Each structure stands twice: as structure tokens, then as C-alpha cells.
Length: 341
Image (cartoon, rainbow, N blue to C red; front, side, top):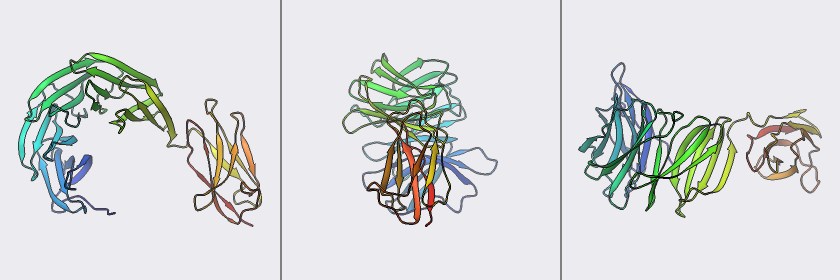
């Protein structure tokens, strides 16, 4: 609907990044991130803008970086931030004035990403971060900024402190994730801080980026593998996954090409498939995105000859066409070919 540049043009520095954004009940937005002024230390910035994208105010604060943001029932932002090695939680009013600020205690590296959950039934928030080197801290914070409870875990030396952990909860448990080397873990603890279960999946990957509660009270995680695939996993509160989908977002898993290109009337589409691909299909689309032809493939197959006919065996007209391979695991990036008659 609109695109806006969210920045005060009178400021001498630059906005490095926005790390979180939330919409209020009346349609306004709060966004937080990091602001850089020349050689000065980094500072936290909070931006408020309306539903049309017009900036209402922007303010810097004496923290290095703001990492995450949630809203209380009155739409006041509660922000997690850090100053050098000390994690903080800050609550602002609707005009950006500080209501309270709470030091979370344990020293953390300034690279540690500090995440916050939505408010639970007891009007408290969960805040999580990884301390040097592999200690995970989860703090339960009251609406007044007091630390109600604190949990600490040392899971393994494979957890990466520079990676954010993501927090969600239900009536019985707290769920959190982080980054590990070669796999991702979803951890479940009860409200006493005891481990209930851990779900581990080997994806030879880069970590879990997002953990969210779904509308049917289950949970979904999105992660990126070392092969540049996007993995979407859905699981229930007991750690049983109901579905795993692996979507390719790079080009390294399936090599696709066609020759000749341009062509008339035939072209050979060549590819390399991995052995674990299930039900691979080659799809051909017209320039409008309509599927006009598909071929069922086998894993040892390396090419298909397309004779410029559609699924009813009729010749198609000169135009640009797109082709891709998909399976139960991946969808390749589409490639373009040109039919010239």
C-alpha cells in the first residue's frame, strides 16, 4: 500500500537496522533498531509511525542496540536492549518516555540477541538470551520490570551466542530455540524450569530463525539449512512434528539448464537430482504463470526434451516460458527459456 523512508533527515548519522516492529491496537506501529552517528558509540532508536507510514516521532536512547519489542495491553512498547555487555529491558509510553528500565543481571556479549515473548496470562513476559559462551538465560519479567523468575541452562558447546533465541509459551510450558552447528533444537521447559523434551532435527544447517504459535495452538519454526534451503516445521506441545517442508531458496541443490535457448521447436532441459528427492516433477509455465506442461521424473533421470507442446499435445506460440523442478523436499528457482518460431 505504501513505502516510506523511516528516518529523521536532521539527524547526522544513519539507521543501521530495524530489528523488530509491532502494530498497536489503533493501527500505529513501533519499530526498534540501531542508530550510528559517525565514530560515536551505537545507540538504540525507536520509531513510531501511523497506519499510513508517516513518522510520528523518532528517538535515540543510551543503549547500544535494541533487539526485540513487545506491546503491553496499553500498547506501551517493552524493548530488549544491551549496553556493551549488560542486557536491559525498557518500557516506554506512547510518546517514547521511559516508564522503567530493568537490568537483567548476567553479563552477555554485546553480540547476544535478546528476545522477548508476548505477555502471558499472569501479565509477565519471558526474555531470553545466550551468555558467553553457551549458557542460555530465560527471565520472567513482570509488567513493572521486576525479574519474577530466572532459568539458566547449559545445553551444549554447539550453541552460538551471536544468534537469537526465539520464545513462545502455552499454559504449561515455555518453548525456545537457538542456533546449533549442523542441526536445530526446539527445547521445552515447564514453569519450574525443568526440561520436558527437546526436539532435534539434523538439517546440516544454520539455525532456527522464527518460532511462532499457530492458530490451532500448535507451533511452527522456520530455519535455514547449510544448503540454503528454507525449512518449515510444525509441531505440537509434546514435541511431535506434524509436517516438515523443505523449500529451496538457492540454486545449489538443483542445477537446471536448457539447450538450445532460444529454440524451435525442441529444447533439452538438463538437471541433476539428489537421491532423497521424492516425487520430482518438471513443470513448465507460460509468461502469465499458468502451468502448461509437467513431466514426472525419476531420481536417475538427467534430462527431458520439450517439444513446445502443452498438456493437450497442442503446439504453443512463440514466447518466454519458465521451467522448474519441485519435489516433496524442494522447489527450485525457475529458469527462463525462449521459443522462437
